[in-house]
Length: 132
Image (cartoon, rainbow, N blue to C red):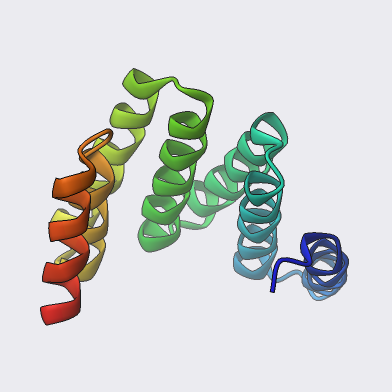
């Protein structure tokens, strides 16, 4: 709905509860959601800071899917900053994790994100995901 400030308020509540109950996975998801909200607001540096917190927690608790998602989010944030090389590096890490874990949807998402600047390829990827 585009109300990112309201989204951030809810993510703050989520983070507070996750910390209170020592839910590290929930804490990581809250940070990732903060990152997505700040990316949507155009604050890419802040988005990166939150995605890095999400990544750190995912690594600490051994959440490979969460780690892959954080890498993908970092790739998207760096793409928005115009740092395509760094974006590619993060999307390749996401892809490697998805392939290793057999996550075909995650691999498809990562492949789609690697088509930076190829709008026709991006469209085909979305079409293929829709067909799947």
